[in-house]
Length: 288
Image (cartoon, rainbow, N blue to C red; front, side, top):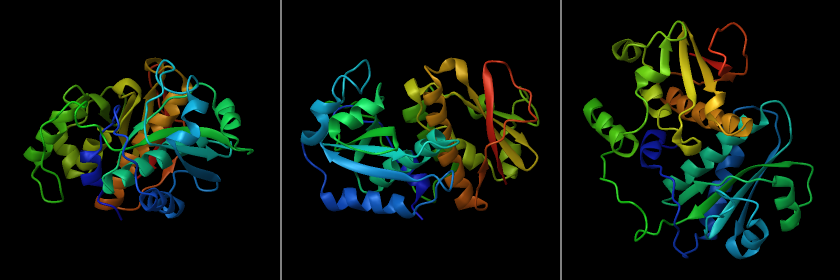
């Protein structure tokens, strides 16, 4: 298994890329890893494709990117999926896992929004019954343009204080764990020591670092006995797609740490049995 703690800590979203291309063998390694990696929803057929800039940039320009501005990168990853229940959450899980594999290979990346996935596939010449569900740029960060952050110590054996410092450096504007994790019921803030006793503090600490649109951290958790319930703020998001992608990503971050520290995690999509404010929706739960 990949060292997910280290990879999450070192993951970053890059907006400016060098023209330097990634070796084909490294992109193929990402693809092969995803083909055998754990997925969020078994039984959904997906297809991951890498394209060089020259093959697709002009065909996606105006259809993808923030406000129609497509990030200029050497490579683009397209994730196609059959349209089944929870296929968008599954896509968020898979595509972010591919990004983290890229981090392991020292490759930088960035999620890209898109307006018309069907048109993008038509322009590129992809004939398929599947839907475009995720688009990610890959390459190497342009060091001259990116914001420099302080280096932080990572690895298996760093202390809690070092972890807290590392969390604060690139994510100082993120919500505290007590703001996103509730105990037993909505609104009852979790106690850090209690989470640590339950061996859940690591999982929530890394889940807190999951990327989301405009870094809004739209997710919340309720610790209900042996269940960790995921809730998403639907009113903070531009659309339902963003909420589902964000859900899949945070499910990955929480789940891979649980896999490492406790047991094999499994998310269940079930919205019943929990009272949350009207602007939120229950996504499902993870048994621990």
